[in-house]
Image (cartoon, helix red, strand yellow):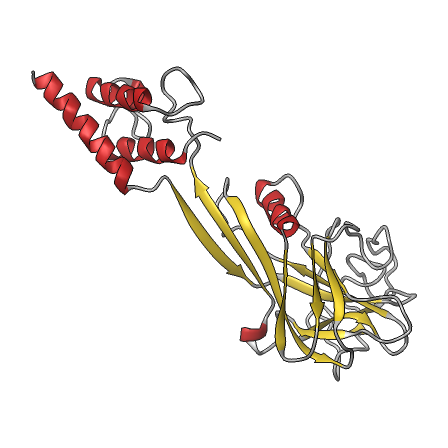
Length: 296
């Protein structure tokens, strides 16, 4: 009778906890870039904008192209998280062009951000400083770029298939890139299956009319207008710790009962969390989390 009583109590504790404790949690982070830069079309690859307060895309009055690079530190997202959505918002603060298309592309090689700061409105760029990304080089070496690690392709190495696209309209507003492919990029970066070199933004680069757009960079004094990557994710355990008896791959009352029996008997099957050999609330909570998370 005492054994049955404890068994029922144990089952009641676990069953009640299954209703009260979530197995996984949803999270959201909003990140600003750790690096951003403008690539200025230039035969010598010696023009840059690593630390200016703006970056550019599109084509200027001289039919020369601007492209922007942005990279984000994703370490705030837990290992094993599932990325539900991702969106990148950028604030346009100057344009003479009308509504123009823009595309976001995953960058395929590492690149740097130097100390170059253009004067004026920034459209002409500045002499490239050490480690600046330029049209020809990933990391510029002054004074002339000799020996600098180069892009495989002038204008940056990036996936030609866009991860997201949007239209950029007038000044003094945010524009947002959001697409399942962008979330997939973030998932690959978090999982470590792809290297996180960030993204490149392209504006319209064809045609005879200018399409240039200027945006607030991470170095702008207006922090509320900095680029921001918003990632929504879910995190939680798999079913391994809760899938105790056959049929494996299915979580049911038999697994629940096996845990309760093991917990009461001091069986290692229920000793899920450290310190091993101690059967306590932490083991119960770990089982609950795994059970609620379900099997992949």
